[in-house]
Image 1 (cartoon, rainbow, N blue to C red):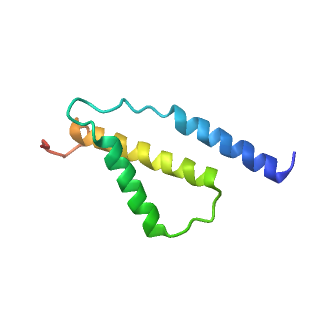
Image 2: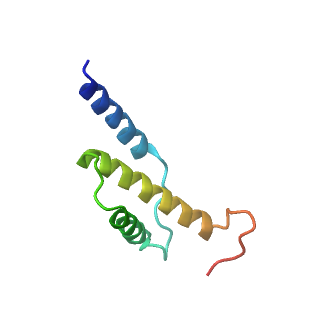
Length: 88
């Protein structure tokens, strides 16, 4: 197996793993969360400039960041962060 084949297999493994990360979906009234996550990740990417990775690798990074952002929003809204008081 070549280095390119190894890299492709590893990328596919990461993509599959990220696809399995649990995100419960928006709660009633939180339907805009996906849009917020997409905008936040787009803002981050634009600040980084051009990434040297392949389109597939950039997609994996974007998906991972979006899921992290969405899960953080859930944690804040459900007060699962120690020391964080009630939120609006």
